[in-house]
Image: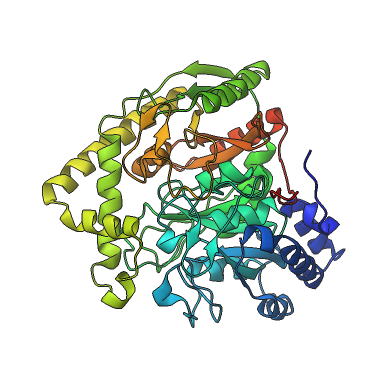
Length: 475
């Protein structure tokens, strides 16, 4: 049994708290105080929010200025921002030694948009160095731990964000995703993480025309995730791939959730990615439950030829572009895996890049056709349950020995390469009490359809799960 001993208001889902804020039944200042109290309770055990800016939050709460009729209006709700994203006058380290004392003068556009929609930045959530890897630790703040078992990996790179939600320290927390950085920690911490389409949630970047790394919402429930997406989405002229939010709020799609889904279930993506036996069993249980609720589930997968190589070329090109002009005093401290990323990116040839672009276009076309037949593609978020945090990356899954630090994250590659929205949603607990997440991939710019499907899964599987008190070895 899980317990929660924090302030009662911290247990409520974000949309319910926002409703109270809108009615004047609670104040932003009271929520900030509750968040501060909860952080004091749990941070010694999990280290999810290493930078807290409560005074800045209180000042912002007194000067809210936005449109209360906007569907994403947060009305003074305290939120978390991942430590890869600048917040004006707040320490922003990117998890790297060279920027340990960096205090930016300006916020990223995603932050200013959230603040304009009534979000109050409460703190910065922990991330691995420059977001590289699915284990949240760095030389500035140390490791973030999984609240369901603090010996275990919380996932990454949005690990601090996921843990802040799972423990009830925050009601909504911003994340970002390239190789599963939203989806993996969501699955491991029992919360919801949505990787949106490229350009929907706009951020500033020196590589503005490279859109595979996206910003996105993380929340305790699908309804909260839709609310946060409504707050984040919209056109931003500083981001060249940006496009406007739809006229119909995403929250409306969630209200129309129907369990009679057409699900294409690909438990190993057609042999592409290995899966541990227990993970396969848990996801099959979820699909059986969905069938019992009226869904049609068929084991099927489109042709994904060259997906792995294509993903790595795209990722390598991103690292090369991001750091090709970076000063040595920034790159010299890179952890080995990050240095390897950069070296690989710089070694790519024009032929490598050309072949990857052809392959990703074919994969996109195959997925588009597949999602004409099915509402979503369902597959693992990762092929294994959490390992100890002391393991930087997983070296064996499904009896296969893995050689690269991204190999265990291969289920994340498809949505990134094809530019499709994907979500991690909890489907209950494992036999030993750890959260299990399933990944749903939706059609092009199909966030509304995807959120409705995720809400249907959540309803059938008894979610949301948390929040919880951290389960430590001394608990």
